[in-house]
Image (cartoon, rainbow over all chains, first blue to last red; front, top):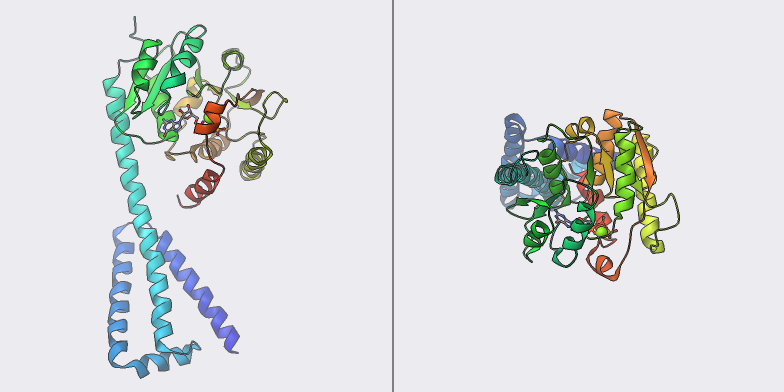
Length: 115
Length: 212
Ligand SMILES: Nc1nc2c(ncn2[C@@H]2O[C@H](COP(=O)(O)OP(=O)(O)OP(=O)(O)O)[C@@H](O)[C@H]2O)c(=O)[nH]1
Ligand SMILES: [Mg+2]
């Protein structure tokens, strides 16, 4: 029984992470990611004061301790952060490439007009 | 080209004997390659910073497309690993209308000498791209290619580094031009071996293709 819950949980975590990672950089996706991050921060802070509450949730999910739950959340957040940063980096790189290419082509003499 | 001052001059001189226009895209070289290329008779298009081989290829293509009389573009490595004879034969095949793009392959004859490990990596890459695109290619990462303006204007490389080779094949698979392969020799000298791609870079290529 427990193993089924755990498998479902792992699958859910992977689906959510992938959705968040793939989810482009449009405003709605960004907002969803920020809201989730806020919720996560609040839960993590609360777990300091009420460790038993979180442990009860974790036990219900078949994870064991509340700290483990926070750890899994942290891992997912890390992946999402990495993916978001990577996408931003790719965008910036793309823009930089286009700018450099424009400079390169504008500076060179046009082909066909050579001596 | 990127930092090829020792060889780029003779490479361009060799090309200039057969081709009227040679464009050399300099990718922020810091060893004076630009002067060498210019002195040898190439038009040098200069990236202000190093962006990578894929970015340079796209810049060269866009530059050449400005010429209304363009018949055929040949891409040729600046490190002296390609043969001008092969390039000429490939350009002829494009100009005769036999195909819109001719891709060089080092695996169609046994002129090219390369290590077993490199052969394995390149062949694996070729099989992968054959399965992914259905295009019948034997060498997916060969820098020597010849193509006409229609193909050129439909190439939009966004992979700045070495992953552009696979990206190019993917775009060709969508464009469906008439294509053929041409046997070419890749000359591995000590110089080119010391500067060439580490096999580990194939890991980076796969990663860059996966995380678009
Ligand atoms: N524009 C640009 N060209 C580069 C860069 N790095 C290498 N090149 C050029 O790309 C060509 C081929 O590069 P190599 O590193 O030899 O790659 P390769 O020929 O695919 O691999 P090998 O089989 O190992 O030689 C040469 O003309 C290099 O000058 C770069 O960062 N920017
Ligand atoms: Mg090389």
